[in-house]
Image 1 (cartoon, rainbow, N blue to C red):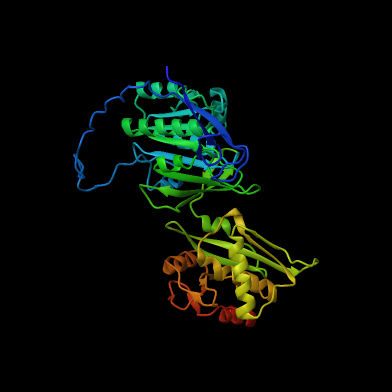
Image 2: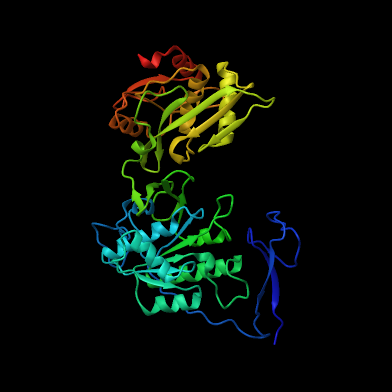
Length: 457
C-alpha cells in the first residue's frame, strides 16, 4: 500500500503548499493552511480508460429556425428571469451569493414555488435548515400549496443519487458550503470540499440537463467564500445585495454565459417575502416637497435598464484638523478624485470642510456617468444653491475638468421624461431626448450654472 500524499491548502484563496506555514505566500493570510490528504494509486497502476465523447458539430441537431437559441426555464419571477437573461437555461449552474440575512433563501424559495406552479419539476435541498423550518417559511409567505420537493441533506453522495433517480427541471442547493463528500477527509466548508461538491453538481447539471442553483456564503469583504475556481465552474454568478435598514434588495449579475452582465433585479422585502419592483426609479426618488441643497438626481443605466437615483451631499465646516470624507453607495476613490478636480479646475476648496456623500435607497453606483451628478450635489451643498426639482444630471468628468459623453444618453433622458422631469444637465454631445438639455463641456461651466441658478430658468 502506497503512502498517502499530503498537501496544505489555504482556506482563503485556495493556494496549494507542499508544507505547512503560518502565512500563505499567495494571499498573505495567517493560519489558513489546512492539511488535505489524497490517496495515490499503487505503483504500476494504470489510470482508468476514458471513452471518447460523442462528437458533433456546432449546429443544433434539432433546431427551430424561428428560435435558434437555447430554451429557457421561465421561473415566473420576472426580476430573477431578467438577471438570468430571460430565464434559467437547462443544464446550467448558477451561483447566488449574498450577506447573511439578506434574503437569499427567501428569494430562491419563491423562485422554486413560482416555477413549480408553472408546471416545472423542482427540488429544494437545504443543508442549513430542517424541512419543517422551510415549510414554516413557505406557509408564512403563502407558498405552502406549491408542489416543491423538499429535502434536508448535506451528504453529496445522497443528494446526487436522489437527483439521478428522478428527473428535475430546477434544483436549488442551499448552501454549497454545508455539503461534504466522503471522498475527502477535509471538513465541510473547506476549500477542497467546496471545490469537489461544486464540480460534481455542475457535472450532474450538464449530464441531466437540470438547472442547478447553488447558494454561496460571502466573506466580510463581500467576496463569495471558497476558492475562486467555483465561480469559473458555474455559468452565472449572481450577487444579492441590500443595506441594513433598507427594505430594498438588488439582484445583480456579475457573470452570465447566457445573457448580459451587470443586469439588476429590484425587490422589496416585506412580511410575506420579497416583492418585485417594476419601476425602481420611482422607488429610489423622493417624491415630495422641494429638493434641498445638496441633492441631485442621477440618470443611470443598470444593465439594460435606465434607473434614476438621488445623490445626497453635505459639505460642512470641519471641527478637527483633518477633514472627514464619508461616502455610502459610491467609490470613495472616485470621490477623492472629484474633490481634487473641483478644487483645481473650479476653484471650490474642500480642504477645511467635511464632505459626506450618500446614494439614496441603498443602491450602489459604479458607472463613471455618475461623476457629474455627484459633483452637482457637492457644489449645490457647498454653495447652498438647490438644483431644480425637474432636473436630472449625468456625465463623466475627466481629470482635466472636461465633461465627457456617456453611453445610452437617449434612454436616460426618456426615463427622466417618463417620470416627469423636464430638463437635464449633461455633456455637450447629448441631444434633447424628451427633456430640455442644458449642455456643458467643462465642469466649471456646470458649477457656474448651478451657482447662478441658471438651471431654474
